[in-house]
Image (cartoon, rainbow, N blue to C red; front, side, top):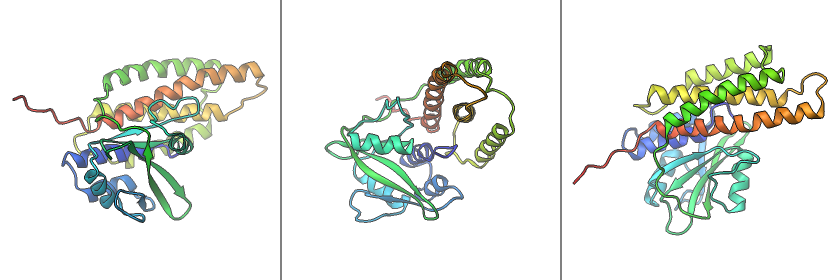
Length: 257
């Protein structure tokens, strides 16, 4: 999974497009970034893969009212609506986008599949239930939880002797910073949302590095302690990143009559 989940960019830019803040072409360019092309297969009313601008139009015509990012992981599939086939595809990809309001029965979700040299194809798949329009994410709550989680991560990983400034970890963090420097978010994205996103993705890199490093002379008990410390921290980072993407475009307040 890329250091910056493309599903988050899909949700943020598609929501911005729904509110008329950006054009479908601008949204598509931001989703793909400078990488290989993105196509969407299975869009309502289409027989083959189409571009993101076409897919967005088809999804809106099908009733889409919002887009929600989901970043599942083994042991944490909260937010996935089913069926099992959709959940398994989302879990294998490590990400998915849920479409609120689409279709009269069931619902829709998008799961990416990356193919070497040929770009990324997003598959529109049926889900077991429709979603209500996404609720406003509490960015402040995610920010507080992330700050606490980072303190816990520093203490826990230091105790497990993995929070050391190693060359490999430094390189991974540099790659993340470079990716974040190139990141385009929708107009009006708050500085707080960006800060939360940066810190959440940084924590994910740290956790991934720690999980992959088996250390020196680690006992079974030490390995279990590390896993127990890392799992909730990764979940915290994933949920904070999702909150930041959702907060990129605040819902338009309805006028009182």
